[in-house]
Length: 136
Image (cartoon, rainbow, N blue to C red):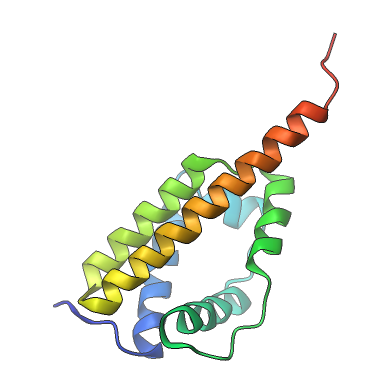
């Protein structure tokens, strides 16, 4: 049964369900698990705080999400395909669990974040590719 997205407990359900999908995804799981070796016990609470800040003006989030993605990008160059897959899993999770104004809002916010970051990563990667010498 779907419900309104109303509070931090709902955000925890969303985030936990979403990352369960990430851990099973062919494209994204290797980045999170193998390359970055994410510590889920510390990562998930940060994500709860992040989405609470985004949706409900929470004040607990401490972090630099763009910096974290730049670190990932240095190990595994990220492209629009990564962000599209992330976004599809996120939308699927929201749609499975929630409905209403905040469910729509979180999808719009996620869409904006994913597209902005995909553009930035592809720009960074193209600049790095241009500055590399061409092999003989």
